[in-house]
Length: 448
Image (cartoon, rainbow, N blue to C red):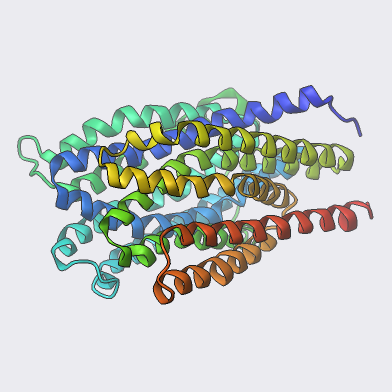
């Protein structure tokens, strides 16, 4: 098996990563648009959306995370020169996605019943409930769209998804305005209108991507829409059981950040506001290692399918070196511009001071976060999805959450101890995932 030069391999990696990164930024931009437009409508609608998104996001990521198994499976089949298998694989992934989307829809319809148990203020219940009921209609579309996105990206064609993601930013503004403010016979629905607009947008994006894939010549040899394969329970199970650990890992991670805001709520509104700003800034920066991890899973999955073990090890090493390099750049960026970044969110001097202090802790975990994301991407490319799930569960729910609750709720410490807990949890996750990757390379690949 041949090995590409380091430069060519980096070009291929970045050729995947950059469009995926733009897509991630665009998706984050959708939430930013919702926040700005809801804030201009009313403060109670903004608060209702914040509550709704806090519930919708973990549910959405759990179910779409299962569908992410499509990426390593498509990459493996492509690398093994077995593209004739892709029609059956993608079609069964779409069937599974439709089922999961309907299950997620039902779950979100029932979630408003938990608002009192979650201690959400009673004044927010009506609007938050309507938001959840509305945005739930888009979940089947999100799940099926995720299959098509994974299929296209795993083939090495991330740009159509990137273009659609950027176009969605333009389309969401008039849709939000239409349903939030009402025009003609349409009533002003506020936060519920924002949920409807998001659901409509998700169906439009699915329609556009499905139409493009069905027409573009680069996909025609697979015939995923023209040659429907008979139902296979085995294929459905293959996608589901490979993807379930991915969805659970995403759920464990996102839920920790959601719980963090609840844990520190006892420290007062100013501290919570500063914490949320720090989370927002680091979440935007997190899209960089996340995109690299997705690109690595595709490249590793392709070489895994080819059984090109030398190239597989090469891309893993390059990926980890790239992750470390990017982490140092992000650390430098945060150190130099943390004041300017904070100023984009608030002009309250007290909130800004606390935010800048918290961002100092964010700097400390960038390296381990970048390395653990790349290690996870490599493991998923080799179809080891269970290890990241168990590591994430142990590091976040077994270490970070208990420590944070103890330090803040029982020991009266400040908000920085949430971030210290994250540093410890991410460091443990990084070490365990790198150790698992080393072990897998040593045992599985050395025996080939």
